[in-house]
Amino acid sequence: MKNLLHHAEKSITLKLIIAIGILIITGSFIFWYAVSYKQKMDVMSIAVKYGVSFIDYIKERTRHKMLSSHRHDIQQTLEDVSTAEGVERVMIFNHKGKILYSTYKEEIGNPVNMESIACTGCHSYAGTLPELLEEPKKWHINKNPEGYTVLKLVEPINNDPACFASNCHAETEKDGILGFVEADLSLALFDKTRLKQVTALTGYTIIFLLAVSISLVIILRKLVTGPVTDLANSIESVTGGDLDHSVHVSSRDELGRLGENFNLMIKDLK
Image 1 (cartoon, rainbow, N blue to C red):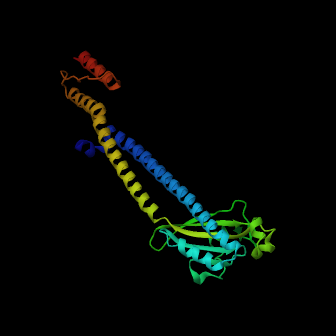
Image 2: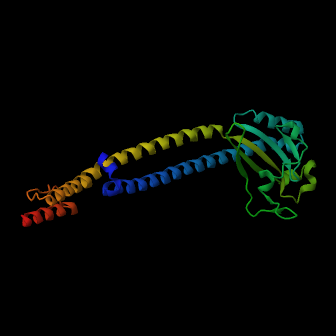
Image 3: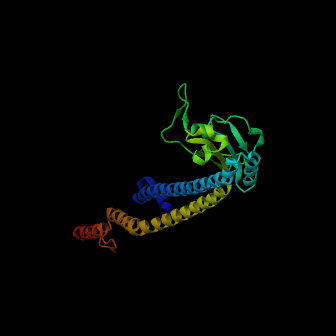
């Protein structure tokens, strides 16, 4: 191996090791990235699924209170569910974007941020007037100050006969949506779990690369370096006038046949 490193530009074995090593490293990196990305998508899929279920639970908990116009009870319900681990913020706003209920009481009565997913998920503001998107986006992810992922979901509160038959929504019979529920859910637990998975995957990949690299060096040394070095030394000996030298042939492959032909050539010369 030391001789290979000193004469790298002349060593076909080292060139093979480098070429195959690059291919293995590239393939391993692609595999690592694909698995890591797949894990991330699976985690997000699960998080969105449970996030939607959480909002459905909120809508179910507040439905009767909305029909009976118990505003204080609705606000109390949001404050109660916000105590659960991972729930950072919950709010309900009407179709015009006015916040009616929120776990952050200072937001109540204010308009929704037009740059949030609550607005940009359904409307395009490229022109002078907002336009509805053909495929609304109901969730978005960002990072909180602690560096953990936060999932923001928005789900509509659909109008139905029970709603517009009540006193508070009597004028909304033609409206398809009365408002929206928005929830910010911390994915800190998912982040920690995924970090462990990525760390383990990285460790396995490194161990795989080391095992393959060592195996590759041993195999090439036995199948290529040994026979080629033996043949090169024999050629140098014959060039120096030693016609009694021969190559040890231990295989029937191309290098083995080359060694046999070399021995026949030396025999004819002698």
